Length: 410
Image 1 (cartoon, rainbow, N blue to C red):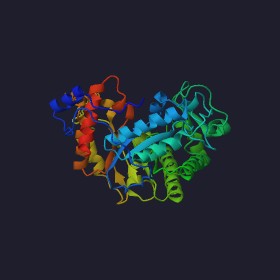
Image 2 (image 1 turned 120 degrees about the vertical axis):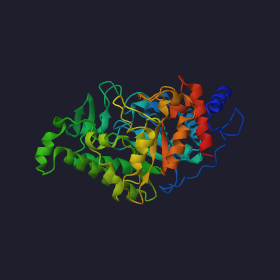
Image 3 (image 1 turned 90 degrees about the horizontal axis):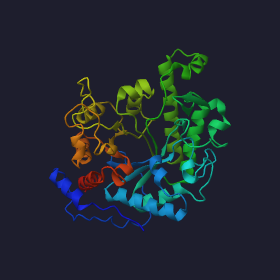
Image 4 (image 1 turned 180 degrees about the vertical axis):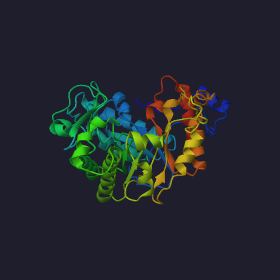
């Protein structure tokens, strides 16, 4: 039986007493019937993007046991996103050098049928695309380019024999207990781009999305031998940034050649210094130079007034948004922000007095959305779906945040 998200009366009262903008409707708000299935065109990147991240964490709780069960849950998921007034979903399709779709390049994810390489008997991505478009949502395929293993126990079980790290052991490198494809290897870059092309050739997705996983470590030993063999005048850090730039530009070209209307966007960390010096991602270059991305969506997971123990308020929502907005960018590159729905109820860990309380008002995300609009940004994405629609710890607060977001998007 399908249970459509509804705003509880207690949550509505919480939203109103907190001063949140609530929709002028009853406390029971059903999702409207989705329109007929049509291909949702990729929007102009300067139209407001209102997106939801749907990650492999959501797949852990989805029912993959049958096509019917998965379709029912996928339909509800998309209806709930549309209910908030969103227009886009960022769906993780390749979290660990694996896939939730039939691929000639990557094995089936263990999330689909219990073991990596084991097929579920249907195509989850095809269902997700159909259900997203039926709900009037554009859908981007979210790919983690390098990660093979997060640690020794995740993904569970052994890697499939068809995993690229198994087939090409010289491509695989260890870092922090995990396994990653080598960012410096041109064959790896070509393989990742081929995987992007495979998605675009087989599914009418509206874009390709990368998050903030690039170089997994700053340790020199990770690839200093390859750097020495490159016989380059670049420093190790600049050489690493060149490797990432090469991949990003290659993927951008691949997207545009395979599907000219599709977009390619990246969600880096909210701290520009971490991107440049920690993950060797020259995001500022991508923003100001044509041929890298259609949009950048830094993860701004801090609240208003956020203050470090040192007293620095650089990462307060209002300050870091202004910092990102001040960076030069090409006319065709949109700037959005990732917002931390997972902070609801818990707070953001800052030393400021409202570090927790603002996340217990039931309207902090909606306030941040209005702040982004006031700063002239081009949209946002919410991390992540379960924090709003399956929040067992802070259910009433999550419901109130949903209602406030819905009102902000009307």
